[in-house]
Length: 254
Length: 357
Ligand SMILES: Nc1ncnc2c1ncn2[C@@H]1O[C@H](COP(=O)(O)OP(=O)(O)O)[C@@H](O)[C@H]1O
Ligand SMILES: [Mg+2]
Image 1 (cartoon, each protein chain N blue to C red):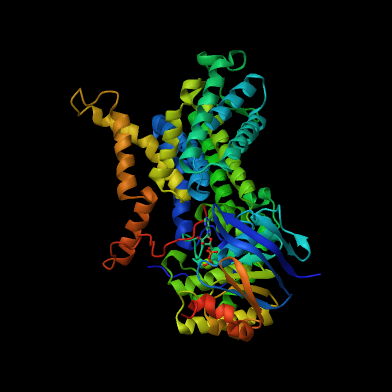
Image 2 (cartoon, protein in one colour):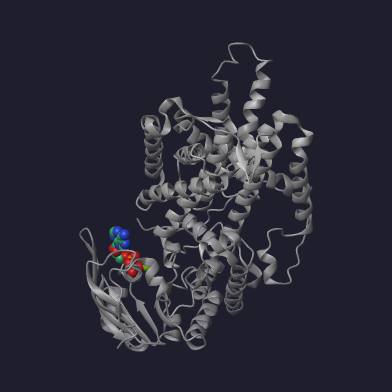
């Protein structure tokens, strides 16, 4: 009975074994972080969880349901939302429109109702809007509400993407390097939000992150990955002190 | 400059954002309603064509401009609508039944054409839709027992609830009404979850699917809706020209339909109407100009050349099309003298290095 579990997950791209028999478990309500040097296979694990690629081996379970064989949108329907390392927003839409797409899995109206824009659709749209406004308040995005994403600074886009994932009301939130490209103040905000997402909203967070400061601050447990294989797991302090991890990051002492 | 003060979420769901819009669109509507009594038979007939092409244009805009797919086969849907209408009318089916049938049959074919779209992108999809056009054209020419082959079919004027729409005004109001309804339906869709899903697919398929958008469903749905609009336009077109044959629905016609979208402005509902108007007006202008041109320039190929040139000029200098040009002009007046160049330039400031293949 685990909340989220990855078992013997593996994938190879031609000759490259990007992820090799990785297993871990995330408990409900915790923040679980995957660290590792560049090219360790962290993003690939996220893409495997989102079923963007078929895994070569292994299984993924979410609330004891196996994900294998589903399509990406079905994964989202189960309540797994994600952000991307390099931001994949809808560029030619406003922040508000981006967040509203996050509400997609909560839509209840049929096509014919939408073509006529019946009162039911109007009510539903107002409800979606209210849900989105909560996210806008939560992340302090009000001043960007009607701005086109294409014109926003990088740091704000990062927050918009987090907002879009939150608008789906996820049970499990996957964050791929939430602090990359952010300045120290923005990183600090990000840390607060992740803590709030965990505590206030009760969302389980699975995160890939480089900034060890942020990692120690928000994570309950950490998994260290190198060349596609697990090299350590434990509390942030334990993993940071692990010789194998130090070696992976700094190279072997001469 | 107009500042909108927003006081409620419902405000963002309105079709008209402020009183000014209500006024101008209202005025346009009044002019359009009065038109048949003011501008004479010939121009009314041209307005009918503009309405008909606006409806196909809207369908294509939904598919190309809002869902990011391509179709070089929309003349085939026009044909399916036209032939359904002609054949059903010949068998005594009333118009208010045959028109929905034309739309539905066309939608069904659109759904079928949408299936390859799940696997194909860009140029490959274009080729698949192009092939579809050729196949439909070929079937219409060969299935003589049903379609009368290349000799074509004749249509009688529409009879609607006992009224014969053979005068110009009656048919014009029918076209105008259907065009308005189509615009309204598309606008409604665009402010609902389905329209947002379309736009999401256009902007990033990966993101859309990670937000729970079923790519397969929505792409085929977009094809079906787009084809349905083309089917409606096809039925009207058949009545407009009163005689249909396969050579009216060739690949060239499909390409002309795509130019509606590109000329008008990809991604704008207004663009469909502007593009349609342009498509109808340009040949008129060209034939007017022919009187003043030397005989060897004013040959039959002139229209294609001008069309091609206009298309190239628009793609190079005004990728947002006629509607984009209008937006810039309006902003220029509103901001005068503070307009600066490049205000509408789309920024591509951040690389997407991690695009999935
Ligand atoms: N689609 C792909 N095709 C081929 N190789 C890939 C693909 N995606 C990732 N890889 C390879 O897998 C390895 C892990 O990449 P990634 O998961 O992005 O690392 P990171 O831990 O930095 O996020 C890298 O060697 C990368 O080149
Ligand atoms: Mg990565």
